Image (cartoon, rainbow, N blue to C red; front, side, top):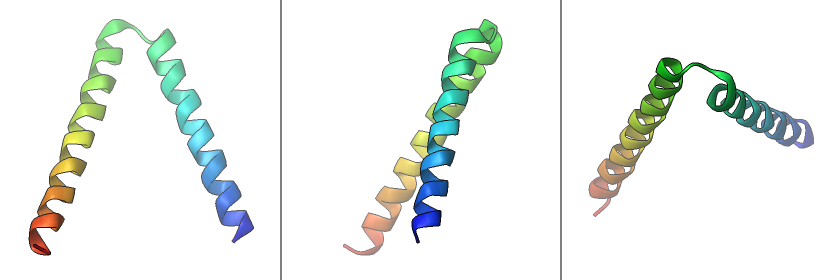
Length: 57
């Protein structure tokens, strides 16, 4: 269990560092594409949560 938590924290930190590097050093078209991708993923996750909520109410 401790190993899984450590791996999760490591993965989260690496993801954050990569996101910061992309935001900081990538050219504008790639940066805009990444931001749009995150918005699309966030919207999809929100829709899934609402859909699951409707299943149980």
